[in-house]
Length: 453
Image 1 (cartoon, one colour):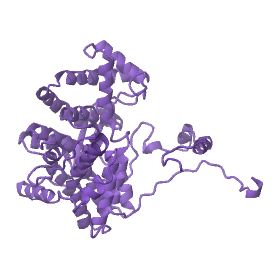
Image 2: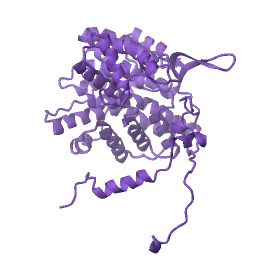
Image 3: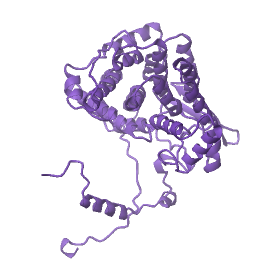
Image 4: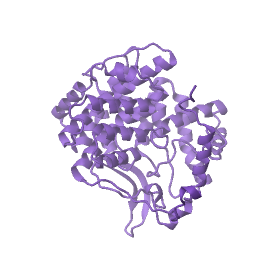
């Protein structure tokens, strides 16, 4: 009988050790060769690799002498401050995701007629090819929702009559279809997982074209198809805040790189999904919730002294996953505040009172207040630390009774709006394949004939 597909044999372990032994790249070599590791400079600032009109992050003010000082974080979508955008649709008691997608794609805010027609188009695109759910999702159930999403997106290539046409109009059509169906693929993939791997009953709801993206997702996900207006509004808000972020994040950069090769939309979006799946990018909100679960099981969370001690133990690799991190604290760009976190914090508070999560929200507030002080004491830092968007999004998803397995797909359902805008921008404005350079640090060696080895 042959070995298992996933077996790591003693020989593979031996080869892995050889690989480790032969790795001669040392951390100091990056400084020696003036290489910005991870495309970041010595201060952690991203290296500029392109131009965009889609979004902007501001975390510092530049003084007259050219020096920089941290400021409260700001985020702009096509020049519109995210706070103004959110206040606009929240004050009108409207859903904002469709409006945000329109803004990101077309660089203008839609009027009532434009938004109505655009939302109707997305509603019409919320359909999958005949038997697609049965053949591509139910017949091949998986345990990881992001992998299900990726292969489902790639499978849609086979159903497209013009999959490789990268004209703007065709790519826009493909992107709108993917924006419309990604929530369906996520929910159906989760139902398949529950049925085949957890033994739960299987149910499939069709989307309703008159509902918003957030409403449709809750309708398809829940067995009874029911949801409250405030639940849908909170999910809609979270999707708006995750729809785009500055262009320099890993998955959006992946979209630019893959798009620059001239490949098809399905391959580009699947590549972005693969990037987002990584726990350093899209999975942080799950870690936040599980960290708080561990905290509640380990200490008296009403005692601030015990909370502080637990956070210290986190940084000392003595608690939770022993990674030395307080999840949800800090960001690659923001220092004093993450504007998305500030918005979610305010809205999470109202939802907490509605859902009976007052004590849990109070704990989050406590950690958000004292964690930056503890991190500053324990770590050598070049900038301040504050709660990021992942800190509160996980709490909101928990209050909405959404399963862990869908936290990262929810991120993808929103961020595909930004990916689409960046793909179209790359097609329109670049025309060059992105090809970064690497410096070889391996010395040349003499070839040894096979008979002499």
